[in-house]
Length: 323
Image 1: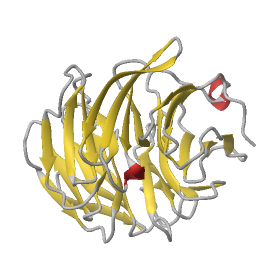
Image 2 (image 1 turned 120 degrees about the vertical axis):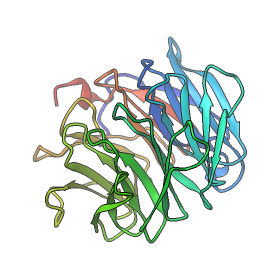
Image 3 (image 1 turned 90 degrees about the vertical axis):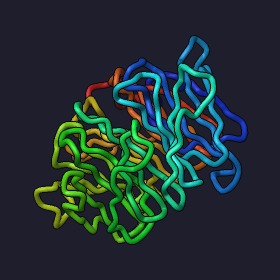
């Protein structure tokens, strides 16, 4: 069953562009970046879309084209205009929304598709991690033209790289090799290897309220929670999706609430601390749903994007009532 949303979704259709990632600005309320690709990311170019809400729904503030599909996007944590995307040609691109043209810089070291990019959230360091199909993670300082370090160890495609919001210099990665790995920049190596699923892991995220808690989403349709103090078994497992889970995000406002989107076309909201952990299923896409984010300013607002060429911002019913 699809629960009724807390109001109609703001929708923008972008013909010929299939959505891969959606990220709210940490600075400007309602501003959304969306990484897209032509032809489902198999061929063609990519477009970075910058969207703002208006009275009629969503309006396009700016768009930037790249000559290969764009698979992920991350906002700068120290400049409201700056973001980084990653693409199928193995490169990262630095953009400035205050300028009509771009990119300002291109970082080309990965040898295959780059599927994930994330800007560190801890103050005092401005670092970016990227994860690639070439089985490496690279560490970047955006002010430096080349990578600072390359992390090896994964034995398959890296689908997801995410900084700890708590521990400086610590990030997680998820891979087709069925492992979740925790890395330490200072040690330049892996700290923990977790055989988290018996399937490819397409996404991971770090809880905003606990430095020890992460979640993984996999091709086996399950979400699993991991406490880094004891990784022998998951602390929770959430079942309900019927196809691979493409992206998972913890809420920045509720310690035990998270959201996931899937190749089953749905977005699902969960509270892993409740016996009935599935809060709501949103069924408003007609293709793979790949991008998902919680607003950092509004406790009820969510954005997603799909291969059906639409981007949506909405308020799920389950977030408009107390969790």
